Amino acid sequence: MKAAWQRLSLREQRLLLAMGVFLLAVVAFSLIWQPTRQRLETMERQHQQQLAVSAQLQRAQPRSTPLVVPHQSLSLRVSESATAAGLEIHQMDTDNDLLRLTLSGDAKALLQWLDRTERDGVALQSLTLEKRDAVLEARVVLR
Image 1 (cartoon, rainbow, N blue to C red):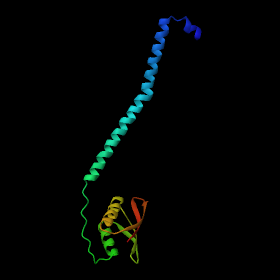
Image 2 (image 1 turned 90 degrees about the horizontal axis):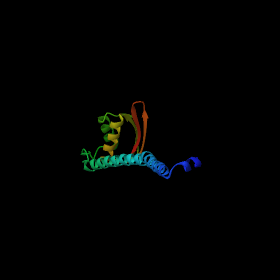
Image 3 (image 1 turned 30 degrees about the vertical axis):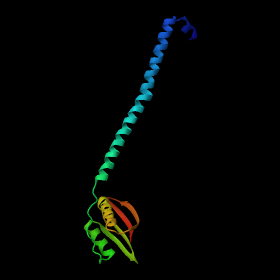
Image 4 (image 1 turned 60 degrees about the vertical axis):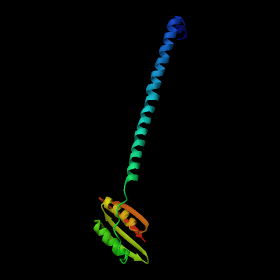
């Protein structure tokens, strides 16, 4: 190989070196620079999308909360609101100021009910969610 290189004229050696440098630059561009640039553009798009979602969340108005009847017991309020939300109550136990509850229903309806219940001033002490077939089951301790 070295002998073949030395048989080439100086002009041919320089042309081959220049072609090698050019090929190396093309390979570096296509294997390193271009994929890195594409990843950067993808990350910038994702960042812009997250900024847009963040701005929407900040503009969102809090939902109006219905007036809570102060003389109603917690169990009655929870039972009525869960039924109104289309949830099925499986078990409800009261212990002093705690209400243990097992209920199930559509995931979206259940999560919205939990959110509404907290916004109504009921403290959520513990929550366990479990998917069962097509419904979401929740075991909740409220105060």
